[in-house]
Length: 160
Image 1 (tube, rainbow, N blue to C red):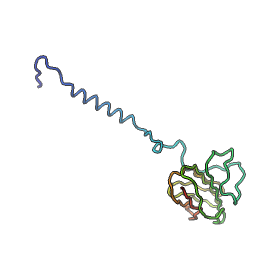
Image 2 (image 1 turned 45 degrees about the horizontal axis):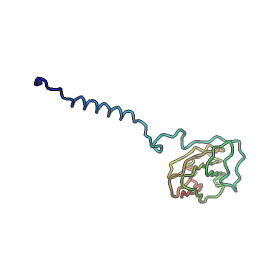
Image 3 (image 1 turned 120 degrees about the vertical axis):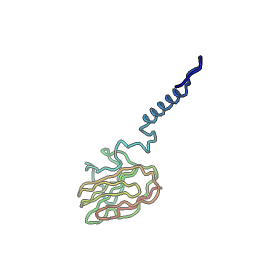
Image 4 (image 1 turned 90 degrees about the vertical axis):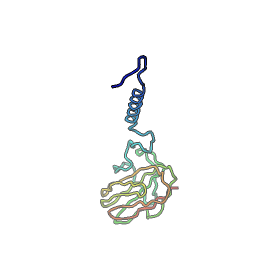
């Protein structure tokens, strides 16, 4: 039993601790979303299988056609076609600047899967249907872009 002297005030320490603990718990519970945009979930997935577009097909001589009115503007578009295990344009290096928005579109004559190493992005490639990945090139280095089933290296992406 606690005995208080006449005129003594009640200690405020338990109330202060209770309020501090309550505020701390509320602030922690209210911070479920990080303000850092690199941590926040994107509004659209980084990888997707693109539906065929009505735009004219790119020629084999032009691996980076300009964006059309029906596609979002990207800084660099890379288009690859695979037919009978032959890659067009031929395997080589494609250089992009760090920070550019890149779209890679691949059409294969056989079911496969596109994969961009280092960025861990991929897209399904149903036979005859273009598949695409779109991403901001934030990591510098040399990254292989390949197919998984047929194990073909399509090109090496250089980000500087």
